[in-house]
Structure formats: C-alpha cells, structure tokens
Image (cartoon, rainbow, N blue to C red; front, side, top):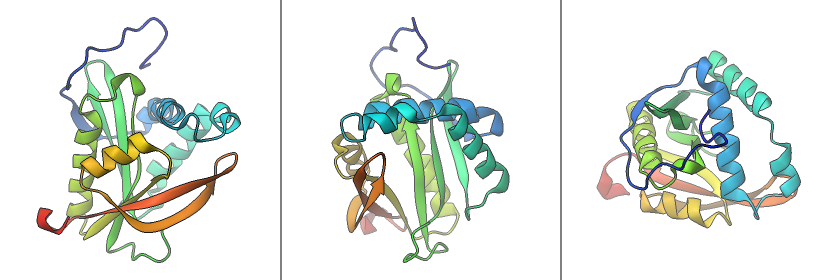
Length: 192
C-alpha cells in the first residue's frame, strides 16, 4: 500500500511514471488513493464527518462495477505507476451534464495522486494522457467539476489550460458544498 506507516516521503522532484489502463485488480489501491487525496485536498472545505465516513471498500466496489459495465460512454481509467506501485489515476468519459452533448463533450470524472507524491509531475502526466484519450474519442472539449474553494486543485487545472465555464452548483458532502465546472478545448492549443 502506498503511504503506509513508517514509509518515508519520496524525494522532491519529478518522477518518471508509466501510464497504463487500470484493471479491476487496481480498484482497492485507487479507492485508497482517492480517499487519502480527497481528505488531504478538501480538509477544511468538506465536512469532517463526511471525510471520516469515506469507505475504501465501497469506493472500490463502485469503481469495479463502473469498469466492468462501462456504464458511461467512452469510459477509461488510467493509472500512473513506478516500481513502487500505483501512485495516481484519472478516469474519463462522456459528459454527465444534461445540458451538454455527451457525444461532443468529454469529462474528467476524477484525477487523484497519492498526497505523498503531490508536486512530482504525476498529475500532469495523468491529465495529459486523459486529454489525449478524450481527443482520440472524438470529443471537441472536456469539462471537470471541482470544489469552488479548493484553491490548490483550481491552480493545478488552470496551469494546464482549464478555465471556469460559468457553471456552478451545490453538492451535498455532509453539508452543501459549492462546486464549479472547468472546460478545455481539445481541438488545437490555440483554441484553449
């Protein structure tokens, strides 16, 4: 398991990762990364009770079902790994937003890197692979949702060319929590 007790923090700096498609065997590790990343990134923004109640087995089961059924159009999940194991993941698919055309607009459903490896280029490598796959699926643009008050996450997205598109709503995460939608063009870099 990544980040277990007694494990030293990796040295600072970029790390070379191999990106591959996730398998059902990865789901418990992905659920662990998701929950640890979510807790670290959104502590103080999301209800402490909600964060404490997050369940690894439930998340792993949900991800296993999604991977098996591919119930979202153009669903893919990619992992970043080194010799130390899986360090992060990204899931992509057609947009789930009712007002958007899911054949035209893709979505980054989740992107998480284990907190012990933040700032090492892993998230950038995953996002690059996700955007490439969305473009290869024929989408002209992609969206993602993030917490309005998650400044670190928003800086990461904006550094990669994502921009808020004006959509916002409340999501119940123990309490109503404001989320905002970001968008990026997948056509040519000049369109971004």
